[in-house]
Length: 132
Length: 289
Image 1 (spheres, each protein chain N blue to C red):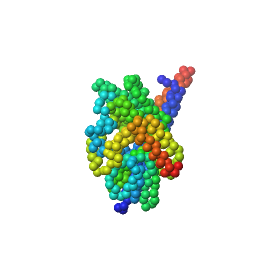
Image 2 (tube, one colour):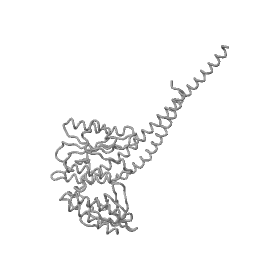
Image 3 (cartoon, rainbow over the protein chains, first blue to last red):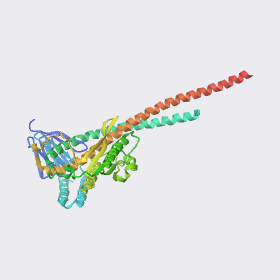
Image 4 (cartoon, rainbow over the protein chains, first blue to last red):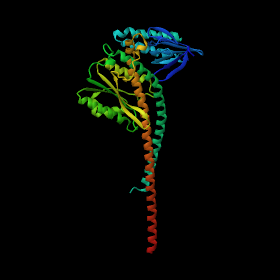
């Protein structure tokens, strides 16, 4: 079918998903973007957020904490540092993530401070979006 | 000539040893399977990561390239990350890594460079301590880790990167065993900082739009790349360790079997000798009457 693209989500430890998708919503570094078949080839980094994959069977969501996505006209590969299906997330996972990001923000160098604090905010926003 | 009782005890003890080595071999076989699976599962990520980074690195080299890529401009202080196992009884697994690291350290020292050693796993640390103990800068203990995860690799990578940022070294090299098969593991030295890529990787950067920018992505990716390489090395090492242990224990089991056979023959022979001796004594006693 011409209007689907191959979607792969891999984390360092395993491959989480490999399906045909009609559209993929990506939490890119500078704002969410939705990719569909025929998208211009793009490589973007991810911010912590929710990745949503839709196809004819419905949609699946994953919580990702960073990494990057490689988009071509026919395929998307998302390489996430950590990726968890939204249904499997719990409050404690987010607590840990927030605690980790906060401790990083504390020790960050002045020039990285803003980025580290944005990271904390992104994770908090992600937690809201995931409904915890 | 050992007595019959000694021989019997000896056979019993070798039999026990054989049971233990056999059990260890089977455990190693099961663990090897798991280790291979996780190494397999980690491959797509590492491959893709390398491909994208190689593409970016091709276009970003030159002026203003990140230091993780271009290096510090010096080649004076080398950090050797020596990855070995936490447990012994795995044949030449640890020795082969240590030998490789030792040769590298000797060469670097002969060239008048400074060497720093970061050890992962206590077996290598023990072997290196006598000659190179004064070069140790840190040690990572993974003995409590049941299942290797990316978190472990990220911890090690963060330590390495922090030291690099602090200007503690110029070049970092990982030493580990690459898993080829159960009977063959290749000790490998892999330079991670500055990053090196295959020459053959084509530059694909023109094809893509980059968000935020090529440099931004590269700066984000390079530290991740270090963590990924450490993770791959850890997984390869774990699979190699189990493979080495499996074949070492297989040999030990076979040796124990041979030994039991030899001891049993000796035992039967001395038993027979004792019986014959007794018979001769009785017969000669009867004849003398």
